[in-house]
Image 1 (cartoon, rainbow, N blue to C red):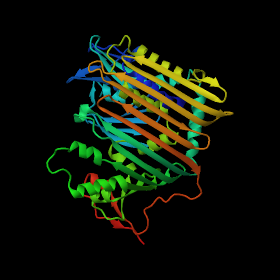
Image 2: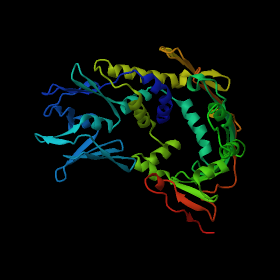
Image 3: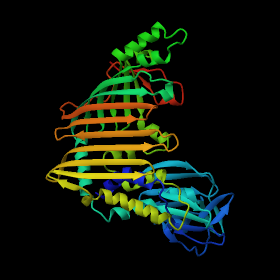
Image 4: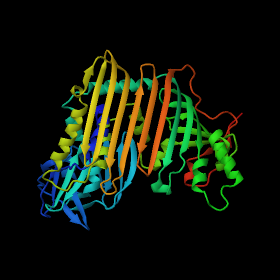
Length: 491
């Protein structure tokens, strides 16, 4: 229950954190540099922080152990290893190459400076050392203080103070579609209009419509077909009005095909292994790709994520609801929080912002109306306003339906341009879903999108491989090297 709260906190806290400060463990050394962790000062007894070549280095054992990590040193290899809560960080003296192991997956990391030894103590670059365990790092130049905040600890401590039963029930509701076989169908349409600020006049809108049908098994195996039609001709004709020559007959024919026949895409695969297959159809797409009709493209998602230094298995665990959302939200905070610069206020401000977000989502923040539980959140700040209402419908202790509506408005103080965004999403007890998005950016652009669909219990497992006789080309390999010749599957 506690870990899911962190996931739900992300949306509220990330917004609340913009402009919030942070802090951490503090230490004063002969170099004049202090270190602060979670608002507390650490006194280094036998090794002080050091500054070298414009970088701050910390004695690894003192800082990591203060963060709750176990530290070991291998004199033969010069490797320093720190372990905390399933995360292992390994660095080697004199080398900028390090490694980070999480959930059994090891990722190589290159630091901008190397650790070193001084007076029989190992020193590591402060930013890498702290961020490896999810800390936010800042610098108070006036007080020569490194500011660190252990967001994972702050979040877990905050979450432990409240109950989030309703959010946990909502998670359980969503996970029902990750077990068994489900048939999915959806239809959508959208319109995008470019305003005079971009085109010089009110251009004709782009219209899009399409549908999706498919089957999902256990939330990972999938077989889906998407048809998408897009009418660009009116827009392009208006943009090219007066241009010499205009569009060619071939171009016009392709645009007509895009608007009537459209683009089709078939997707098959198994998300657990990360192996996906794609097939594109329609005259517009096959002309653009220059491929044969029976060509399928393969993509190894796990391999691609590994090449980017990302953990695919952790992503899949998150999708299945088995992730430590405290650690995930810690990463989100590190990306969204302004780097702290005041040691005296940083930790208190961030702590208050996280606590406020938690209070907005705790059980007693919801109002009761019959079988509904309603969460309402409104905020106005610096010319922007957010209004969100989230409604859960319960049958006993089980969530059977939900409804989410959000409105965001903002105005640019310099240009005066007003921006509005409206989002609505709902699913009823029978698995029927609706969604709507509309956005208006004045004379820049406007957009609307509507979707309806449904989940129904299925009986036939999805096909996860291309059909027999298909030619398969590795889409991932073509990113770094010439695309290989397709290989033909056995008949």
